[in-house]
Amino acid sequence: MSTLQDSLRLVFARSIRSGEHFVMYLAHLLFYLEHQLLPRYWLWPSGLRPTIEGLGALVGSLGYVKSHCSSMPATTRFLPPKNVQALHGHFDHGTQGGLMAMLGLSGPGTEWVKARLARCPKCLEEDIADDGLPFWRRDHLVPGNLFCGYHGEPLCTPCDQCADFSKYQKYTRHAGFTCGCSLQAIPEAAALPTEVAELEIEMSRIGSRLLDENYLPHLNHGGIGNVVAARAVELGIVEGGFYRADRAAEVVQASRFRPLLERKGIVVARTQSYADLFKGKMVPRTPSATIALLAGLHPKWEDVEHAFEHIPTEVQKVQLVTRSLETRLTQRERKANWKQKNAEKYFTFYAKDYAKELKKNPDASHVELMRKLPHSAGFFITEESLAAAGYQVPNFHTSDSYYKRLDASFSQHVKAKANGFVDAGWKHRITRHALTRGHRMSTNYRHLLPHLPKTRDAIERLQETTTAWKQRVAAFNEQASM
Ligand SMILES: [Zn+2]
Ligand SMILES: [Zn+2]
Image (tube, rainbow, N blue to C red; front, side, top):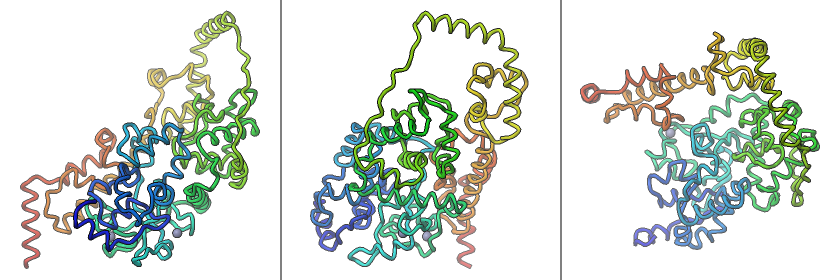
């Protein structure tokens, strides 16, 4: 922020609005580098202190920007204090190592892959800055958000070209600017059945409120654990210090938030991590899963608000009754003997149940099927022993249908890209990179390719050799000159 050009630009710059996303504001002022518009940067910007101080009265203080123009007030609520500090350090001074892992955002399947420059058509009419142009509302840029929490409308994105912000930066200068295409509702939002859409809208409304740091200040990492633990005791999910998985499943089943809890990956199981979750020792890593959990454990969101009115108190620890080492050893031995003696009988018994579940759930993975069986089934049947006995065993973690769906969407993407390039007379060579770019899995698909035959074929078939490229461009130019 030191060159003459920069100072001149500042003279004509407009000031930031409360609720405006700071990085997108920088984009508006043209203070950005190409890499800064990649989702990871605009979601988790870093080293902004000097920029904010350089902008002075246009944006106010560093604290003002964080509170009113970033997602920090909501994000920090869900993190333990040490990570909150790291996140502030990242925002103020520069990249902090391991931050993405702390935020649960470090891989495919996590929420950052869904990051997109979404906007609400109604907000566009209301969110007008001093220069008469609509600004980017921070609420809509929270990954995973599908609806506007103010208007209940599905969020919208423009065409692929406008959305490819690494290539066409100018289309991101303000929220209303597109190449001339019209805004379309995010496909996931448009496809939801009404009752799930209503839950998503409620989630967005809650998410927007959580961006205000004065709203439920006690709704933070420590408080969440205490409220979940207290509610789990009230609902009988934790009884005498023991986690009751059946009861937890029952509560989730009966909850109006069930569809969302499942979508956010909370599928109650008889595992240590769910025991920790309901005892308040662990908080889900993504805010949306935590909000869904809190909402799912209470009849109405107002009840959650009530629970956080004051600092939530910790649930009294219950001393578990433990047996002496000697007793435990004899019991363990007895159990091992029993297991050995009955191994064959129970293998047949559980393997039959397994096959029945597979018939009922042909798309389930091995892990999902095992979750449907009683806990003790795991002592007798395993992926290997089932396969060895001639039983059909689906993929361990990911079901075949997941790959089928991914293959269909990815191969269509590749074909559409290729057609687009050919029609537009794209002057570069159509490479594997060009064909896959823009798809949600494009950064992480190579290890999946063995499962995606259609995509593999499409890439092989449609990527160009240098000769094919030159011929295509020549043919296009010839056509154009006629
Ligand atoms: Zn709106
Ligand atoms: Zn467009």
